Image (tube, rainbow, N blue to C red; front, side, top):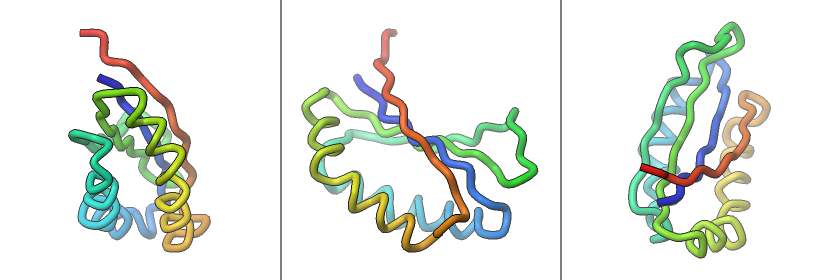
Length: 101
């Protein structure tokens, strides 16, 4: 299993609205691509949160091919939508992990 991890720091002013949008709109659309089997959203709570909380969206894929397809064919659309809605209220980065046990 491969985890595509998106870590996001979001400003306090919009974090509740962003989180609601992420859970109710963005994640269902990502899952609708059929390239991920499940997800979890976690809060990184031992972080400096003066500028806002930090969350990690973890998307679980059964294959590298599925992840590659998402990154080639879909990610730009989802990133654009997030930028269009939330502007400079957030910063994020991606990482890829493989489940060992």
